[in-house]
Length: 386
Ligand code: F3S
Image (cartoon, rainbow, N blue to C red):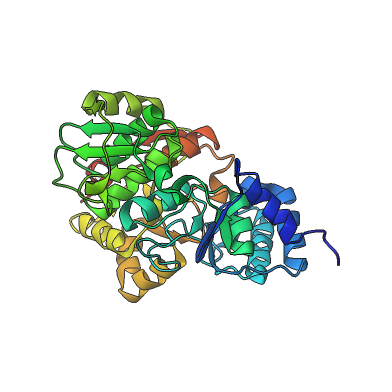
């Protein structure tokens, strides 16, 4: 069947990003967002089905973001949503995508290196690739990442030009950042202040600079801000060579507390729906699952369910290491293939406790759920039994 979709259509999409002279850069990896049926609906599914029939194929390694279902637990979702989510993934596989279904492709499924030019959508992964690994990707939209995967190149704009990587705003955080939630709140506060400007960040206390905490910082920054990169002093490859903006904005715990108030409320004493702790936004690494297991060592069980979201690759590794059995005995469920915007949460009246600022933002604003922000340790101290 003729679909009318060809390379010229996708080239026009990339050209719309360019001002003045049109130039391109070759890429060696793409990562696509806009995969969840709950976001793209029937129109998005039809488009991807058309694309799979067009004969076009991805020219570079291409991974995909999570959807809205766990393919091993169909009974929890509306069967139509489940079936359509499957069709979306099948269409993308037919065009050449790897069925990664994760927002942390950099861990296993689409590992990239410093200096590698790539075209990734999914803001948390973009920020990780640029700020931690030192790769180069703009914060692509769903369509521009798709166009780049099909063409094998992207527009030479933004971060692909030297001046597009320069920091334009300087933040210094003074004080302690004790856990993943503090880092997430800092990222969110920075994004609100920075808008589309690339920041340079100095932390006066670098005691807890763990990858899992940096993931939260970057994911939250990508939620409230528009820039694809944070120059983190002592972390981002090449940070010592960039010229820092002169004016410094100092952030402290008061700013983080006021940001927290916008996304976190008190739990009602008798909530209508169930209370669920959600973590894994962005998806957990195997180290984070191990740490979670360790944190639960002295707890017999949890009095509310804890849902942990991860990639299928990490899930299988957790199974292999015997981690999931122990967790499930304590009331922890591991989900794979899905974003925290999980099918059964839509139109539910659940109260969500989460340690992810990004998850709180989307579950609150898109699914209209009540959200409470707590670090994982705070959650275990409150809801751990025995
Ligand atoms: Fe990943 Fe979904 Fe969070 S794509 S970063 S789990 S909102």
